[in-house]
Length: 56
Ligand SMILES: [Zn+2]
Image (cartoon, rainbow, N blue to C red; front, side, top):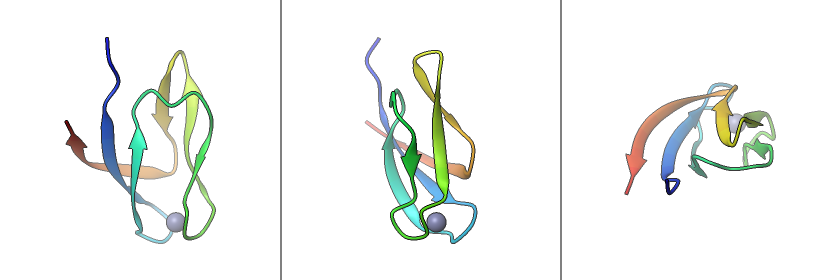
């Protein structure tokens, strides 16, 4: 199953960031540096952001 890119919004600063849904490393907000996702079981778990839309 292929991963997808998705657009998320940082909970802390509201920045919109495009992430890979199956990212295997932690992704930090490029604006404020807070943690957006942490890897969990082969997919990125959203920890500090809200999903906005999937990008095919
Ligand atoms: Zn941020």
